[in-house]
Amino acid sequence: MRILLTGAAGFIGSHVAEALEEAGHEVVGLDVRAGDDVRNVAVVDQLLPGVDAVVHQAAKVGLGVDVADLPDYASANVYGTAVLLAAMARHDVRRLVLASSMVVYGEGAYNCARHGRVRPGARTAADLAEGLFEPRCPGCAAPLTPAPIGEDAPADPRNAYATTKLAQEHLAANWARETGGTAVALRYHNVYGPGMPRDTPYSGVAAIFRSALEAGRAPQVFEDGGQRRDFVHVRDVAQANLVALDSGMGGTLVAYNIASGEPHTVGEMAQALAAERGGPEPVVTGAYRLGDVRHIVAAPDRAAVELGFQARIGFAEGMKEFAAASLGDIHQGEATSA
Ligand code: UD1
Image (cartoon, rainbow, N blue to C red):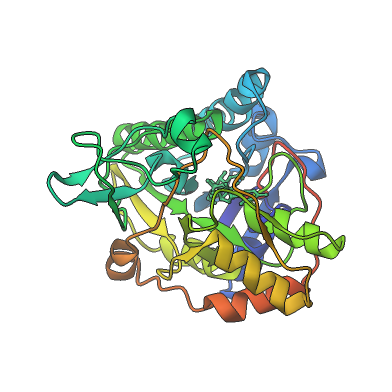
């Protein structure tokens, strides 16, 4: 297929480009680093003729610093996607793979012994200050057991980035309904691997720890280090994009968790990277960020059954490679992460 890949020069996008080309596809890259912006109608109109599918990775990523960032997030992620979808309709391009994110869920899924499956709200500053990091049951305040989150969990976007990722999904669903097109949203969990952008206010924790170690500083592990994530290798994410091109259903959007299926704590990740690099040892600080969720781990089953996607690079192997790999430079406004 001839594929328009947005964010082609970014962290994830460059790995996706490689996977697509290896599979024999022809990749037409679009990236702000190359001077092309997905919001530019003329650029998109010029690139789309003859294209069979669009793989949309371009986005402004990370948590954002404060509300001053809102217009940029909305413009790059929401308006950019809207421009792209309208152009796809004009050029009769009927297949879309969208980089989405597990952040659309907000806090992960939990079970309460008394109330069954519950969705706790944001943790209070008072609890966090006391070192009470685990969310409590909204019904009875009892401690909860975390559970893998499935794609049908209600969305609960808690920051600008999450809100714009969910908006992208909604716009893509709209486009699919109105054009009969096929949209597949890949909800990336915590992506890491070679070329991950180094430490910035927008970086994910793996890049922050890796940058600290490279500078000879100890990784600062927040809370008690017991917060769980699913760290998925960027080459696995690239493969997920490849297989997603052959799936989906006309007229609708289908969303998939893209994860390793092997959750680990943030503390374990810090330990693994530090051990591979020969120190310094991580420090568990007890500090916290109000916007952070405690645990978010994926149910990878739907992607396994429907996409035939299964991550191949395990935690130990992936972290070993990442500890030694080189990092990239971040460029906000394009695909560098999800
Ligand atoms: C991250 C991304 C999010 C992306 C998602 C899935 C950021 C800021 N967040 O969400 O955009 O959609 O992965 O790919 O890019 N922590 C430390 N020490 C630090 C920094 C963070 O212990 O120096 C802890 C945090 O408290 C948190 C965990 O690491 O518990 C994960 O943090 P982070 O990677 O920033 O955010 P996610 O919520 O996982």
